[in-house]
Image (cartoon, rainbow, N blue to C red):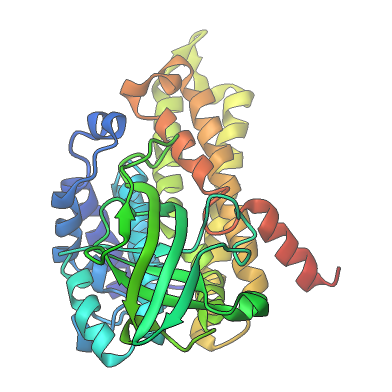
Length: 381
């Protein structure tokens, strides 16, 4: 494996850092407190080309290779001082867009992908339900076949973009007796009768990204809006939860690096008992632990991207990367707070926000325990 980067790739990362520092850090404390989504920042991301990285050129994207895309998103994480917007970017790029690119018809892709690339709208990826949690396939939402299409009934919960999405890719059971093999996916427009988006729900972290419920009550969806074949939902979701479950954390690598740089600077400058606090072993060891976490997390994610480019199996490595990166970010965020002391706990210094944001990574795209189950199963248990 060669994780060396070309000068062009390194330049693209530098440009991503500069863009994020310049355009994505306005009024962060206030927007985080108020849970405010920024369409202005989102459209700036579109103009910079982020929303087209994983989309074919035929639909307005740049079809950038996976390694370069990961590096660019890492740069966004380094330059952006909060994790909500980078999470939103990664969520769209690694769930909604790939589902359309891989399973959509030319007509579906022509309708939705160009508008996603320009930032004109966002789409939701709706599989989770109020009572299913990690058991995603035990869904209660149904899609009953009728003349000309399907009628959807049910509710989706904890859905990124749900309150503002112009459309949702909705997973529903078309043949409950077949279990997971009876699940199909549908593109449902917000304007469809029977489609209800609940208001934004408050949450612990990632507060600048809207999050909430979708309800479907006798919602008719024409057959041409089915995404992929009937019963193909399991393949679609499996793909989204394979390599993509780790790619969604690409920006956290950049945030961990920025976090480490800030802690090193603070440990050098902060004086206590006649010397910089970095001279104390308790602090220096935390810095060392943060460094090790960053490097191991980085190489795990790079390996997943490399395996995909080589066309090799990667399910175990993707689960390992999702597990390791998410847990490392939480641990390093705790260390950052400890190093900064009271300043780390105070909102005004923008240290504590990483911990609140990081906890979500232990849950979304498959909990840490689910990743452990995958790894242990593939290992032979």
